[in-house]
Length: 137
Image (tube, rainbow, N blue to C red; front, side):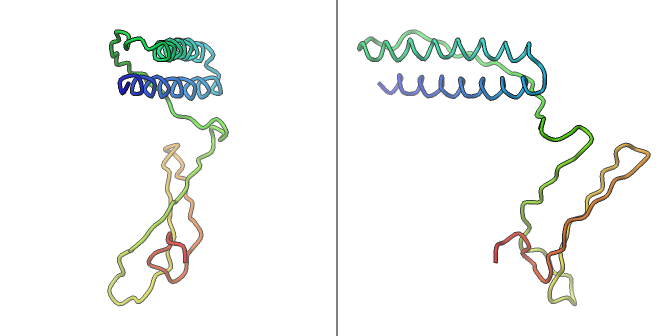
């Protein structure tokens, strides 16, 4: 029965991966690739249903083979316009203290050299007197 559980778990993971990829490429406007992911998702769902049926009938695990497929995917965030950049600074901790200082006022400065003729800069808000600005107080 361990083989059944392992195969079911793998098929469920493949179904979820196909669904996530399908939704992403559809949101990006690529309906042809979304249809391909939907087709694979249906195939994996049928395989899962067949496997579950065989398990319930007490039949042995069917013959199967593993296949490795590689897909190239562009990760995109369709909710952010193409002319904007969203950056999140998650945390910083145990920042080194320069000699002669007792504390720091910390911030992050970002420089994006695109397009090449114009450098865009931004700065986060300052966290005063902290060597661990990302650690909740």
